Length: 94
Image (tube, rainbow, N blue to C red):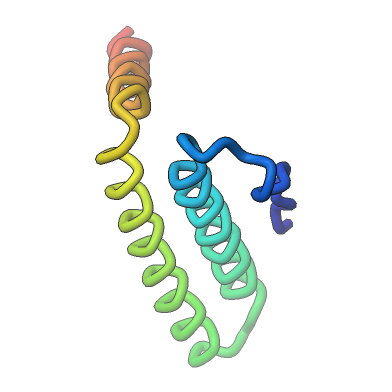
């Protein structure tokens, strides 16, 4: 299932526009990863599966590129990612 961009980019505030662009890029790349991995799981053709999974891996790299830029711009995002990691670590250590 592909995402629908939930906002009109033209209506975003200038001070958050670049961060929203990066987040939308991440959404598009994650959609691509999901699509290619789902297609790979459905095909019986090993060549097609191999190429789809290779492309999905490349899309994951793109997610990392967008995320790296976002984390340079959004200190709150950095903090909340750390909080999320701590919560998972605490829950799984129970």
